[in-house]
Image 1 (tube, rainbow, N blue to C red):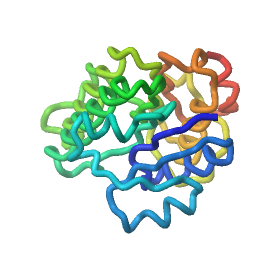
Image 2 (image 1 turned 135 degrees about the horizontal axis):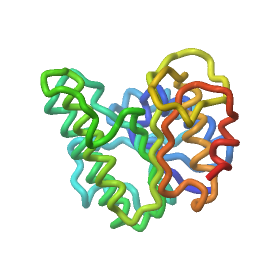
Image 3 (image 1 turned 30 degrees about the vertical axis):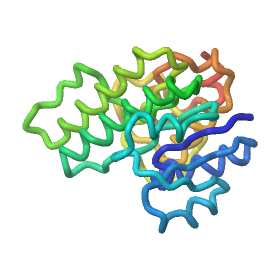
Length: 217
């Protein structure tokens, strides 16, 4: 099993993914900004690590990620503030990728979203534009690294119970439970590197077992 740095460890998806990862035998260091969230994170089985990734430079992130086997980026500014969206979803994400390379971490899992692309088509006057641009640039940077990367790209998130089944062939975004996004993250981290490296997993809720989708790689 591997040692995983889970960036954004107090997010809704991360809190669902951490118990799955630890149950599978992985050592999870959940990186969080607020010390008050440490107990909740620890209850998932993960080890809370306090660090502000928005403020941390590449050198600091390199030390934070050193000796890990995988990085999972599940952080985000949460929208509403364009400057902070760029600082977290684009700049900090890119620094974490460069830090993973510098630290010798082989694998990187980015939680993105279904429509992420450089040609996303979102109008500049749309409030979602800054986020779409930030994610597109972060994802594109990741593709250009030497990391064994995987993009986990769910559609609209719900709090419905997970089904363990997704549709990874859909051409348009729909909905998917956060619990199933967490299960996809866990399945990617469990998989052999060659199965998931370089894959972009766009998915809605569906009928295909998650393990079957991962095995198809």
